[in-house]
Image 1: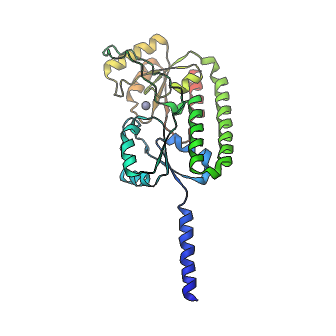
Image 2: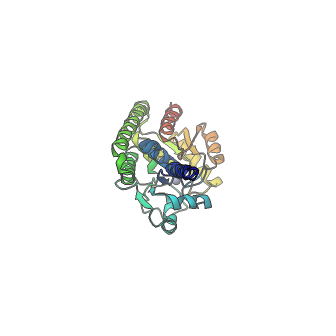
Image 3: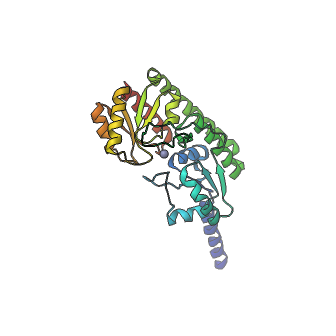
Length: 287
Ligand SMILES: [Zn+2]
């Protein structure tokens, strides 16, 4: 009898541990995608973000801990950032049954603004702007793809996921509607940005970005002088800098033009409140 209870207890422990770890692990590339998945799946999945705090999506290598997580993940939602390409084969090697789900399907890409760098001549071709997670329409397309991907992993949760998805979409709509009213007087304005990550966001409000950063490098003294002259010419008073990049140069420029440096994290995990914050800061700076 005692033996039986012992076995039962073991069975019970085994089952509880199993339920504890039975949530599918979802892999995302960058922090904002964690909110996207969480808002649709709520607590039905675990989410792991590949890109750690402060790392650049233009160059990234997974840590040994992340490699273990990759091996356990059921699905990876890619978003077209640079490091994914180098990681693709590695992930397929680590896990043969992981679903690699492209959330950029159907996203309408914008092209990156050309910058007037006189030292360069190979700016003929248009480059697609990869920063699609800071948009409105582009994010809605990604969310629909994430919804489809989550339903493919947990089909029994379809109605639940669709309801959460619809709630999230209406919240996003109302935030953009509010910001649209607030930013309406500033259509056509030019805002300097350190790294050109804000094109999709600014497009919604008819605001133009001009990148201070030159080809992902620190601007030289010559670049700074050029930017100051351009800013003065165009009467630009706002510079967006991201915390992932040095802001020394941006501060120098802001000082010279009597403008404002706004620190923004384009990769913040709390995506929707970050969008609201960016819009409000933008309105304040343009006032
Ligand atoms: Zn970037």
